Length: 87
Image (cartoon, rainbow, N blue to C red; front, side, top):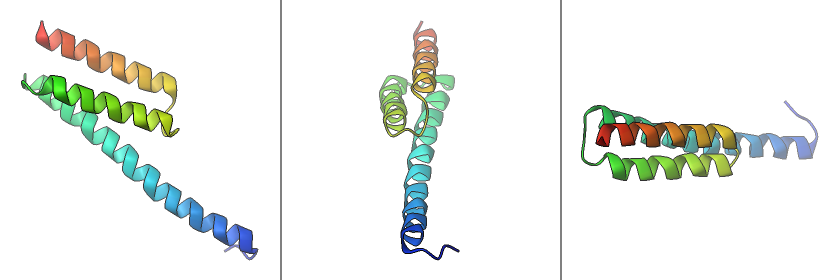
Protein backbone atom coordinates (compact mmCIF):
# COMPACT_ATOMS: atom_id res chain seq x y z
CA UNK A 1 0.00 0.00 0.00
CA UNK A 2 1.22 3.50 -0.77
CA UNK A 3 2.19 5.73 2.11
CA UNK A 4 2.56 9.09 0.35
CA UNK A 5 -0.69 11.03 0.05
CA UNK A 6 -0.38 11.67 -3.69
CA UNK A 7 0.26 7.96 -4.29
CA UNK A 8 -2.84 7.05 -2.30
CA UNK A 9 -4.94 9.47 -4.35
CA UNK A 10 -3.41 8.16 -7.58
CA UNK A 11 -4.27 4.59 -6.59
CA UNK A 12 -7.92 5.62 -6.03
CA UNK A 13 -7.96 7.40 -9.39
CA UNK A 14 -6.51 4.34 -11.12
CA UNK A 15 -9.23 2.11 -9.66
CA UNK A 16 -11.97 4.47 -10.86
CA UNK A 17 -10.41 4.78 -14.32
CA UNK A 18 -10.06 1.01 -14.58
CA UNK A 19 -13.76 0.51 -13.82
CA UNK A 20 -14.76 3.16 -16.35
CA UNK A 21 -12.46 1.79 -19.05
CA UNK A 22 -13.53 -1.80 -18.46
CA UNK A 23 -17.19 -0.86 -18.71
CA UNK A 24 -16.71 1.05 -21.95
CA UNK A 25 -14.62 -1.72 -23.49
CA UNK A 26 -17.25 -4.26 -22.50
CA UNK A 27 -19.97 -2.12 -24.07
CA UNK A 28 -18.00 -1.87 -27.29
CA UNK A 29 -17.47 -5.63 -27.45
CA UNK A 30 -21.15 -6.28 -26.75
CA UNK A 31 -22.34 -3.99 -29.54
CA UNK A 32 -19.89 -5.56 -31.99
CA UNK A 33 -21.08 -9.06 -31.03
CA UNK A 34 -24.72 -8.01 -31.47
CA UNK A 35 -23.87 -6.78 -34.96
CA UNK A 36 -22.01 -10.00 -35.80
CA UNK A 37 -24.91 -12.18 -34.67
CA UNK A 38 -27.39 -10.04 -36.62
CA UNK A 39 -25.33 -10.36 -39.79
CA UNK A 40 -24.98 -14.10 -39.31
CA UNK A 41 -28.73 -14.46 -38.78
CA UNK A 42 -29.48 -12.21 -41.80
CA UNK A 43 -31.41 -9.85 -39.54
CA UNK A 44 -32.89 -6.69 -41.04
CA UNK A 45 -31.57 -4.57 -38.15
CA UNK A 46 -27.95 -5.27 -39.10
CA UNK A 47 -27.50 -1.84 -40.69
CA UNK A 48 -28.67 -0.06 -37.53
CA UNK A 49 -26.49 -2.30 -35.39
CA UNK A 50 -23.53 -1.51 -37.67
CA UNK A 51 -23.97 2.20 -36.96
CA UNK A 52 -24.11 1.55 -33.21
CA UNK A 53 -21.08 -0.76 -33.30
CA UNK A 54 -19.10 1.66 -35.44
CA UNK A 55 -19.89 4.47 -33.01
CA UNK A 56 -18.84 2.35 -30.03
CA UNK A 57 -15.56 1.46 -31.73
CA UNK A 58 -14.90 5.14 -32.48
CA UNK A 59 -15.62 6.11 -28.88
CA UNK A 60 -13.25 3.45 -27.58
CA UNK A 61 -10.55 4.68 -29.94
CA UNK A 62 -11.05 8.31 -28.93
CA UNK A 63 -10.71 7.37 -25.26
CA UNK A 64 -7.51 5.45 -25.96
CA UNK A 65 -8.97 2.06 -25.07
CA UNK A 66 -8.02 0.66 -28.46
CA UNK A 67 -5.62 2.01 -31.07
CA UNK A 68 -6.86 4.04 -34.03
CA UNK A 69 -5.67 1.46 -36.54
CA UNK A 70 -7.53 -1.33 -34.73
CA UNK A 71 -10.67 0.79 -34.77
CA UNK A 72 -10.30 1.41 -38.51
CA UNK A 73 -9.63 -2.26 -39.16
CA UNK A 74 -12.63 -3.39 -37.12
CA UNK A 75 -14.96 -0.90 -38.81
CA UNK A 76 -13.70 -1.93 -42.24
CA UNK A 77 -14.29 -5.59 -41.50
CA UNK A 78 -17.79 -4.90 -40.19
CA UNK A 79 -18.62 -2.83 -43.26
CA UNK A 80 -17.38 -5.61 -45.52
CA UNK A 81 -19.48 -8.19 -43.68
CA UNK A 82 -22.54 -5.97 -43.93
CA UNK A 83 -22.01 -5.41 -47.65
CA UNK A 84 -21.52 -9.12 -48.24
CA UNK A 85 -24.68 -9.95 -46.28
CA UNK A 86 -26.72 -7.40 -48.26
CA UNK A 87 -25.43 -8.64 -51.62
